[in-house]
Each structure stands twice: as structure tokens, then as C-alpha cells.
Amino acid sequence: MIAQRISGWFRRSDSGASADASEYSSVQSELGLPVRAGGMEYRQTTSTPASVLGFDQALLWVILALLAWGVVMVYSASIALPDNPRFGKITPTHFVVRHLMGLVMAFVAGAIAFQVPMALWERYARALFVLSLFLLVLVLVPHVGTVVNGARRWLSLGIMNFQPSELAKFAVLIYAADYMVRKMEIKERFFRAVLPMGAAVAVVGALLLAEPDMGAFMVIAVIAMGILFLGGVNARMFFLIAFILVLAFAAMVWFSDWRRERIFAYLDPWSEKHTLGKGYQLSHSLIAIGRGEIFGVGLGGSVEKLHWLPEAHTDFLLAVIGEELGLVGVVILIGLFFWMTRRIMHIGRQAIALDRVFAGLVAQGVAMWMGFQAFINMGVNLGALPTKGLTLPLMSFGGSAILMNLVALAVVLRVDYENKLLMRGGHA
Image (cartoon, rainbow, N blue to C red; front, top):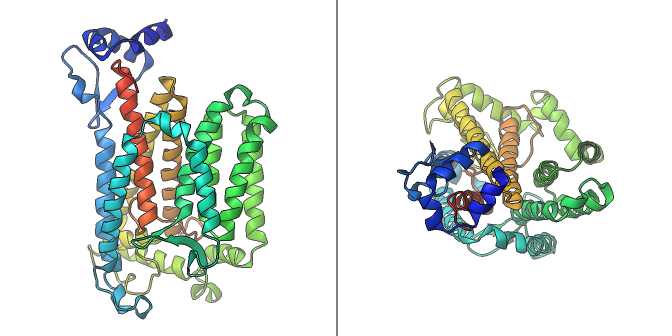
């Protein structure tokens, strides 16, 4: 009954849907799909204007708050770096200015991404995946890829260094969602449904490990597995894939001396062998967070950022937040990321309830991306997980990471916009 009413409702024009707001409210109530605008739930009545049914403004404000907080903390964490000979002659504002320039480019890219209909993302999902593979190969070419700290992960674009692995996260997400929509009819058959997707992720993983960038590979593997699970792949297949992945990551660690050393350093960062070696970053991150106690030493008052804690403005930004803003700052930050992830998952569920499976899987994939990467970064900074080179989404210094984060979140806002357009009788 509900399906018939929705079918008729979607065929109406915008004017027809506005004239019949009471029926809209009834269907929406039965589906449990509250319309959100500016963080508030609206139950549609004849007096509710259609203008409130735009994209999720509360989500946008949380994203902007995290970005603004990130700018402040990047400036605080990098202000002393001009004293370090490693960076040459730079000004105290060098990194924050570059961060702001990256944000400007990211906002432009996000605004463009928001204008692209989800149908177009679905149509070009495979082309985007092939492009990401090409860039991952290109970055490994000598004299083309830029080497930093022994890793070949960047392409120099003049105004910024672009990291193809960040595009790969988004491309795999879009491709996996499109793949599951195309394979819905055979998702119970392992070799026809799961194996091709597994092969695609394996190719991406091999290219990432050649850089090496195991952290990005972990994020991509979780995104792909999550979308397979949410897309309805048989539970036995899912756990089989998970088991194979765990074995694969364990083998990577076991057969790599420096990765194995990182695990030992994580288990005992205070030992004489590890404190000045592989456990150096972790031990100083824990010292920074310990100094912050409950309320922190005050914004700008960090001691660990004064050349004691390496990469304080990138991978270990949370440690500086913990030292300067204390447990209160860390808890607030965790709360904001948890709220954002949950909100994006809600948008994805709403899209699937409206029979927009591709859009729903994309939104939920972005939620897993942001949530898992933030979880790993926070776990590393707090000593709960082994050291891994993953930045804190939306906050850490890094132009290509911020750019792709905002593109992905703009796509989520587009999904929400099209959801609300459909719910008031328009066409996505």
C-alpha cells in the first residue's frame, strides 16, 4: 500500500505535491523518514514552506566547525617549525597559509561536486576508478612521483602536491556502490559477485603498498567491505572476506621488518630500544596528552610541538589538541566526529528507503571512510593502536586530503538534497 502511494507521489509535479502536503506527511510518517533542515526535524504540514526542505544545514555547520578548528590547531602546531632547520627559511604562518589555500581549492571542488547529480556519478563510476588506477601507477614512475620521507605518494601540480591515494578512496567508494547495484541479482554467488570486486581492491592495494601506503589501503579495504556488507552480500561470504583480509594484513606485518618493529614499539613504547626509535612519536604523543590533563595547558601553550613531537601538524594533531585543550577538547572532538558519521549514515539509510540504492551506499561509504579514518588517527594518538600514517579528516594539514574530504561530503549533501527533492514530489 505504501509502495503504491509513493509511486504515485513520485510521479507528481512539484505543485501537485505541495498541494497535497497532508498525504506527504502520512507517507513520510509511515516510512519513518523525518525531513531535517538546519538540524531540526520537520513534520510536514500545510503551513511548512518547501524552502525548509534543502540539504542538511546542521551537517554543514558541523563540517565548517571542524574545518575552522583545524585551521586554528594547524597554526598552533606549526608556528614553531621555522626554528627547525629541516624546513629551511619559512615564516611562522607558512603552513597555515598553505592550509587555507588548500581549503579554498577544496571548497571550490566541493561546490562543483555538489552540482553533479548522483546519476552522473553512477554513470562514470568505472571511468573514475580507472583514472585513479592510472594516477596510482603514474606516482610510481621515477622523476614523476614526488618522494617525501622515503615514500613515493605525491604528484607535484605546482600549486600543491596531490596524493592519488586520496582520490583512490573516493573512486573505490563510488565504484563499489555502482558495482553492488549492478550485481544485486547475483550477490549470493561468491565468484560472480564478490571475486571481481576483491580483485579490483587487490590491484589498488598492490599499487598502494608499492608507495608504500598501508594506511590508505586499510581505509579502502574497509570502505569496500562495508559497502559489500550494506549492499546485501551473504554474511558467510562477508566473514570469509574479512578473515582473508585479516590474514593478508598480518602477513604484510610479519614479512616486513619495519612494520613488525612498529608493532613491537606500540606494545612497549617506553623501552630503551624503542623510545628513541619506532616508539618516539607514540611516546611523545602520550606525553603531550598526559600534560593536557582535564582542561589543557591553554591554546598555544603546547611544549611537545616545539620540535619534540614530529608531524604535530599532520598525523599527530590530536596530541596537540589534547595537550592544549585537555580531555575536554578531545571528548568534544570525538563527539563531533561521532555525530557527523551517524548523521551521514542516516542520510544513506533515507536514500535506500527511497529506493535510491546507489546514492544510499555512497553516503554510507563516506560515513565509514570518515569514521574509520578518524578512529584510526585518534587510536594512534591515544596509544590504542599502532602508529599508522593517517591524518585526521577535515583537520590535519594536507591539501589533497582536505580536497577529497570536502568533495566526498559535498556528494553526501547532494544525496540529502535529492532525497528531500523526491520527498516533496520533485525529481532527483
